[in-house]
Amino acid sequence: MVFTLLFWQCEDKVDKFDNWPEWPSRPVIEHAQLRGLHDETAVAAGDKVRFTAHVNDDYNDLISYQLEFKSGGIVIDGESGTLSGSQADIDFETILPFGPYYEDGYTEVTLKVTNAVNGIAEVRLSDEKNVRVTRPQTPAQLHLVDNTGAVYTLQRIGNTYVFQTSDELESLGSSFKIAEKLNGSQIDYTGLVWGMADEHIVIINDASGASIPAPETGGYNIKHMRFDMYSFKLTKTVDVLVEIKKSDMELVTKGGIDYLTKDNIPLVQDCEVKFTGFDRDLAAMLRPDLFTDLSGDVARFVGDTRNWRAFYQVENGFMYVHTFNNEENLLWVTGTGGGFPLPPYTATLDWFGTEPHGYFSCVRTGDDTYEIVMYLAADFTLQAYRMVAWGSVVNWHSATPDLLTIRSNNDGVAGSDFTPGVYHLRVNVSTGEAALTPYH
Image (cartoon, rainbow, N blue to C red):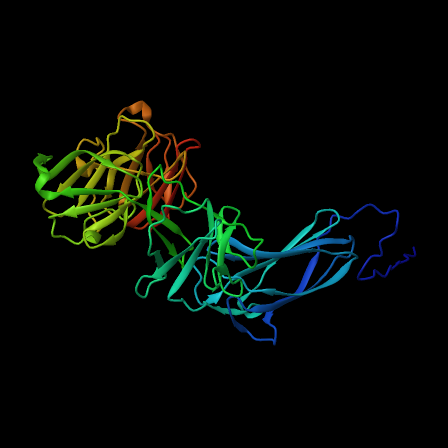
């Protein structure tokens, strides 16, 4: 018996004939790199850079590319273009954008390439193929220029990244931009200019960039505005001052603990609250998610406009500020293993929500979203309620199961990666989604 062995030689690449169907391929990205215009590996934010890459696809034509720059998880700029044929070189110059939470280091740079059958290849530049970025210098002042042409100066606060307007803004227009430089009273786009894109404050490069909408004030005048050049966050303070005097508060004992109390305090969102007679640093007394911009005995209140209750715990100096929990549009959290988010970090939640230390009122941050910062111990259990009734409990699920696990009985408990500390809890009462993240 004779056996014949037949051999076929295969080419590395199979030719594509005109009548073949489209192959489900993906493009191949090679040699993607970002450098300064003179091949520098370190540049300042706002400087020009050059991006290069080679892309090819054995079986389908290339259609397009998209390059994204991200900072703080937000897309702060990008470039896109069309491609043709089975291979192409991408080579262009652009401005290295400056974004929120920028540290000296590396910006996230991602290239996405699409072919004719919607096959997509994506690559994120490694540090060695990227450029190291330095923050621009922080100026002594910035300029707020509104849509009417009025100019307001923002002065830098100390050595921080925070700037505050020096004049009241009673006549502020409906929108504005924030600029580092002016030509007379006109914005000079050779400097840093902040505008709006996709509902985020971002750096814009020319006059076509969208302006920032003026904030809602609830009919109150704006006393001043602050802009944080690190986070790109803009806040306002309305021209309302509410004073809470220690001498006006009534001494009561609840759960064996002495409190100074005051009911029906008409607080306005973004108003100033003056704490008189407490002889205590506000940073050691107030919840950081409910009061901010602390200055002496005055803080900015960020909760909803409504009547609130204040309970000053005499022994530890914590000020518990609560809503009246049988009203609309609120959320409160109780359980066990949670407490005030300041040292000495003690768990005081009592499940029933009847004592000031036994529950926390959340901060409303959207139509359906509520947030709170609290200390959580290793054995915490949480539930969230709309009102004071078992039926008003929020049926929730966790978007961060490694830190927060929801049991079948609706209890929120520690996930596998949880360690005791101060955490930020966000709850959407419409979808039931809850997210627990470390507070920084």
